[in-house]
Image (cartoon, rainbow, N blue to C red; front, side, top):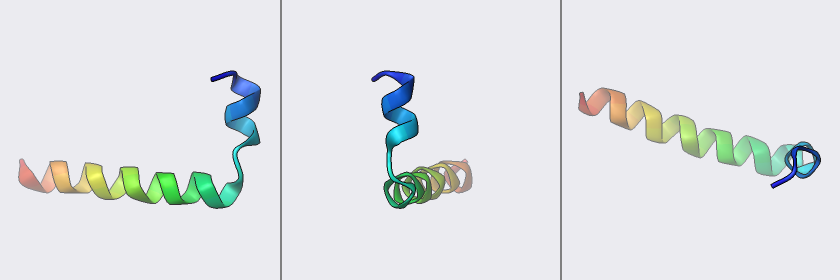
Length: 32
């Protein structure tokens, strides 16, 4: 993807993706 495309992603989509990534990372951390 071009940087412009990444910046063009809607806030709603970006926020949802971030929530998913954060939840995944927290799960990995808690799993040790």
